[in-house]
Length: 184
Image 1 (cartoon, rainbow, N blue to C red):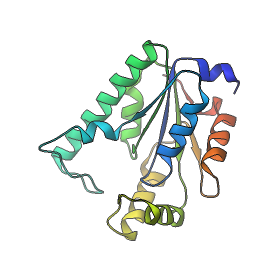
Image 2 (image 1 turned 135 degrees about the horizontal axis):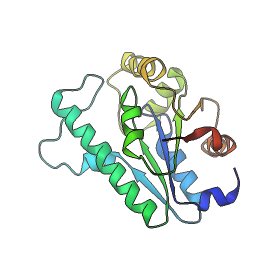
Image 3 (image 1 turned 180 degrees about the vertical axis):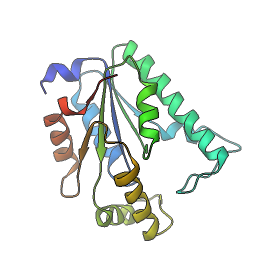
Image 4 (image 1 turned 45 degrees about the vertical axis):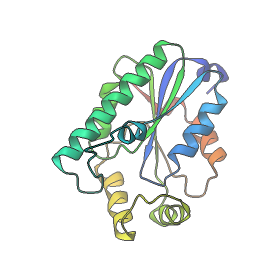
């Protein structure tokens, strides 16, 4: 990866389970680019004032519908920012077969995908240190980890960030910049 790659309008998708470091890594990566946007997919969920479906390991039909809308809105926003000349660092929880669907929403745009996959023990430690709660219990952390590792298509570059700081994770992502490129 060379610096000019961070100057090119494109989308960098950072995904993984809750507490995997997506927000911190996305923000740090976006700050390294001269013209960038940190797009947080969860912002679209938070905009729903009334009728917001509960998200968890098991999703109701309404939760699935709202999650799909969130991914579609994120893709539209990313496309608009790319067309305006920005590098978009888009982070969201996109695990399981949905990753392929979200990648398809970015058809025609330069897209790189980084999947953060720290160990369940690291997820539990990070979860305990957070002010918000994403998991109901330790068993749910293991269920999400299994979903990520066994049911998520192997698109992009998968990065075990268990022993890495935020800056080290960004450095590692930049070292594997080309491996993360998705061909549409």
